[in-house]
Image (cartoon, rainbow, N blue to C red; front, top):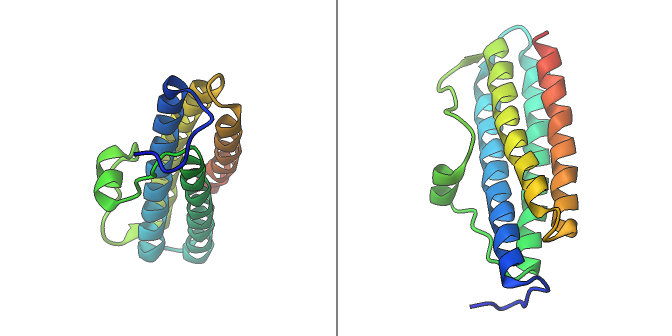
Length: 156
């Protein structure tokens, strides 16, 4: 059932909705991973890494809302349930327990790298069917790439 009628053709809507749903899942998981590590980071760089992780959480949460609202605007029901995120995320396993600051930074480099790679695939997939969605995904990717750079620089 569509409550909101999409301006896109059914074929284009399928492509775009898959890209948006995948982005939503990855962003929700990224926010959870960053927050989990945020709570458990230890070491001499605790404070700076702790605060940097909160910046990633804020970015991921803000963009997940944008993505979900774009899906809704196109007549697609966004699915951010825990089970959906657990099955669909491209992020690997998050370390459990206390995480040394260098390992925390490495874990975020890996998580961001995985999400960015998938976002770049979504940029390509949405170019023709919906440049508006593509623009949103480009903006998200740029923000994630900035975080990726900063975390990579933190471990030298």
